[in-house]
Image (cartoon, rainbow, N blue to C red; front, side, top):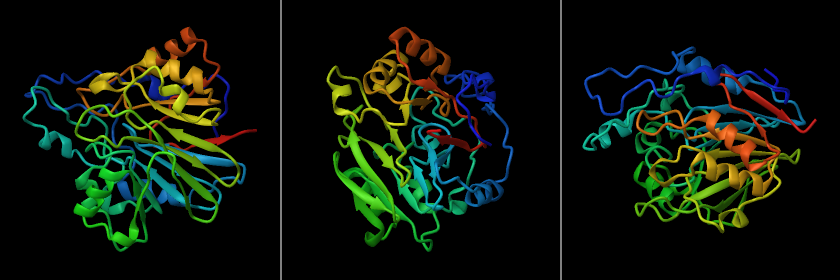
Length: 302
């Protein structure tokens, strides 16, 4: 599937992310969309997907979960939450945190080269996901300080773990770099939030905000003029609201903006359409793209 920049009508836009009542513990969770592929088949389709030399391919797995691939075949995952572990861990809360998206890929079937987490919150550096990964596969694990702790506790060998501080850049594969960027912590459980900026051999730059709170100074500390920016918009739990995210997008001037962190948990949804409207009100020139699930989105500067 090749993405164009011309008034795309996304099936994701028609999904209802508010269908589950977070306070009704007796009601069964209704999935926002059905599982369309088996875990193994979906993972295989991603591994086999051929990316043109002038492009990158992006798959959205919900919340802040992304898979990225370029022509070299290097497959990078960001904040992959592949279980429903938060539902049990936070069952004591007065609202439900269950996932309402299918588990697209089971942890045991995940076949990627680089596993990145922006911080250690369970929906980003999920201990159950990381424990269940096939550690015999040659996979590198990158993240800030507290993510490294989670990796260690979940059995990731020291030789596979790489600590990234904001502003620090490392090379992954032969030609791709990852730079940790600044993010403002959203609570006291992890003071080491980061975003991530990936630059591929063809020059395409993909920036993911991770979770971040808002501050007036924030936009001056973020990467500017990137090709693609994936940014949280949910507004809950001190994350950026749609209006705040739009102000940041206007300031950092990406070519494409992708909303995320609005769809997964029944207690923490947001509105991509409200974000689209906020971009217009803010006067941003960024092109809004809401990614479909189960489909690769192909981005090329041409």
